[in-house]
Length: 202
Image (cartoon, rainbow, N blue to C red; front, side):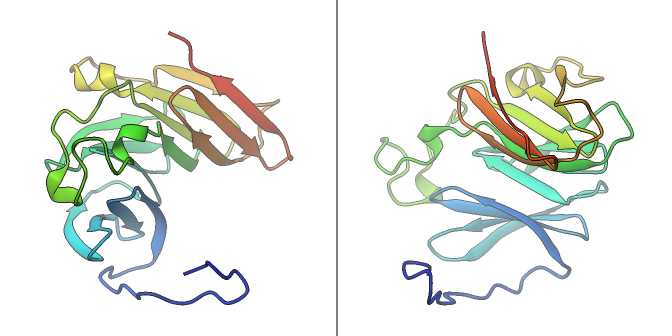
């Protein structure tokens, strides 16, 4: 509880992971976590209970969620998951030997609203067909490159041997330290102190 920033209070300690937790993401109803032993866990926010775990052979140092989808990633591999079905959808490659430094997905207001006709009491009342807009996956690496995938293309079954788009941020060689997204834009920054805003166009 950080309502009083000078006096934060510990609400709950969760010990389900067996190794170091490397990343978290959440909405109002669920949160996801990954650990360095390549485990993705899905939790229910209002009970703090682990709903299930998913194991992968690929590094899981980063995670991002846009319910019902989530992505995990490490090194040069990004894995797309369907959390409602608890299954792996696609294994994606950034197309280079650079190391992934951050990962994000399109933020969907519909997946975080309280009174949208579906999500009134938590995970059990989530509506079906939750992917209402194109959900983009953006991965940043240690050489200043953004890799972008459109999940609508991936879910339609089209082959994807490389990201749908590469964007070099700055002059290159600068680690991308953070990515934030909404439905239309990406904001990213690198270790040289540069901040960039990119806009998705149809």
